[in-house]
Image (spheres, rainbow, N blue to C red):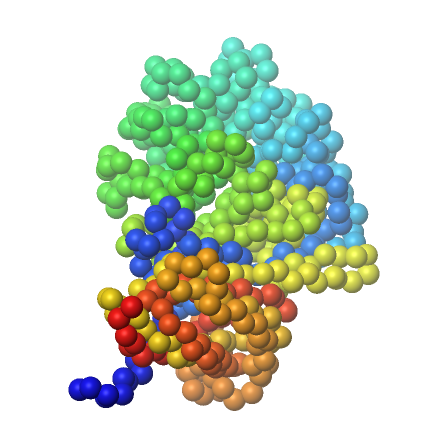
Length: 522
């Protein structure tokens, strides 16, 4: 009817970006549940955008990067080792000012050790170096152990990878025979000759180099640069049986491999892949997990392929970092999108705080070896550095950018009225909001504001001060705050960018809605 007032309509945007980052597809072809930028954020159990936690320094500054971290259990104590400049230190993470204990000084030029626990003892390997053995509180070359026997026919036993499982120590990638895997005597990682042996892969995969050795679904998995080989009956070496050769797909970086449930996730030449194809582990093609960021990962792989990773079990996060690129990615393995990929976000750091190594530990949860030569824990909402007396807290910025959101009115333009958001927590957080319209590069609206929800009080997510559910993720959440932003703009398509600067408190975007009226044809 002519002259009839147009009603205000509402578009709930609660699910914007819920699928995480997609830099691969054309932004105009993506739905609003994708982000084109997702920096320094993760997701709550309910799928709400929130800040990553901070890196808090727990050791003194060692200068050179921490190239490897490992938690060893000797049957009585949990010990954290850190590798710097080829040397291996025992780290005291209970006193940030404590001097490092130089447990072992090696002649290695790098700190790219791989550690493995075996029979309450610890072993370490990196390419070009002899295997190290930790026992009775000290490191030494395994070749110095009483009763040591070298693998048959090997002059210098210098494997690039080592793995303790199926009752033996396994090693591969030695300089003389890069495509041979050696195994020790049963329950004796000192003896490699007598009852030990080897698997020569030359006749199995042709020409390749052993990168890593892992256990997978009751099988022995050997990763090469270009191929993967699976063996059955690794616990009974006399009946070892070739199960499968996966050709054309290998692992580019040893420490990208993580065990996630019954699966192994690793970095191939084309991105992150899953070794588990189906629940029956049949011979279907390997699953590609990073196709939404494929091109940028390939750029990193080609130019700086060294990757360190960890699987944060309590949150279901596979974290991997290109250590020479300050590019850290996080895959939420609890949530898979319609493209079959986990939800992905990206982390960046300043002042050499970025990861140079990662480890998920029983004692300290996630530990981060940093380029600055320190080990940090993952906690709080500042990146915190020790100044010798106390901590200096450094804020960081979490940000996201949506795709172009179609307001769904065809040839009709819409009159934007309000953007309403509800934020949980984030006391004192500085927020910047920018709204773009109709593919323009200059924002139609740019606004900044400060979150000031109560730090405690009566607003609770579940309505009562005491939750009946008990589990942490169901406990009541205080500090909800609504923010209404008047728009008074017109658009057919909109794109929203938002960033927040941390002030030590967790903040999460609980809901977002757009109010608008249908306007005229343009």
